[in-house]
Length: 251
Image (cartoon, rainbow, N blue to C red; front, side, top):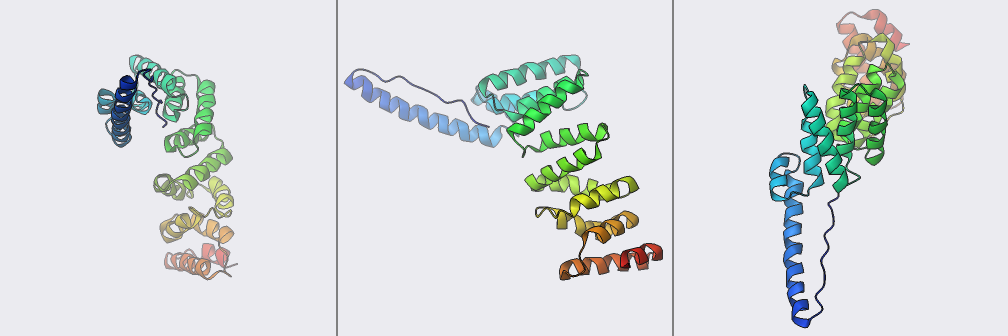
C-alpha cells in the first residue's frame, strides 16, 4: 500500500542550505531503501519490517491480520482491532486493515458491521484476494448463490492466484444439481481470464452429470476448440456407460 510521505525544512543560511541538501539526499536514499525492503518483507516477515521501518502501515496491518486468522481469542481480537486502527491512521486506504476490522466485527458477532467493512475493503481494491474470499464466504453462508458466483467471477478475473484456489472448488460445486445451471450461466459469459481454464478440467475430470450439463449449455459445436471439448465429454460419458447423459448432450 502507499507509504506515508516525509517532509523536511530548508535552512536559511548558505551553509545550512548545503548541509540540508546533503541531508535530504541521505534521507531520501534511506527512505527509498526502507520502502524497497518493506515492500519485499512486509508480507513474509512484517515483524522484521516494523523493526527496520516502524511506520510501515502495511506491516502493521499484516501483523494485525494474523491475530484473527485462526482460532482468535478475545485478547487477540482486540489486538487485531487496535493494530488495524493504527495502520489506518498511517494509511487510510489500507485494504488489509479494513478487511481485518471486518473479521474483528465478524468474530464479535456483528455480521452487519463486518459486511459493511468488507464492502469498503472491496471498494478500495477489487484485486485483494482475501477480501474477495471473505465476501464469498459471507455470501455463501447466507445462501446467496448469485452473489457468491458473482464474486467468484470478480476474484478469478483479478488474479491467477485466485483462479488456482477457486476453479477446483467451482468444479466440485458441479456435483450439486442446484448449482449447475447458475454455474453454466456464469461460465456462458465467457470471462476471458478464466472460462476456458475452468471448462478444460471440468470436461476432463469433473462430475459427469454436472460437467455434461454445463458443457451442453456453454460450448458451441461450431467453434473447433469447443467442439473438441464436446467430443471429449461425449467420450467420457460413453466410457463410463452414461448413455442417457451422452444422449442428452448430443441433442
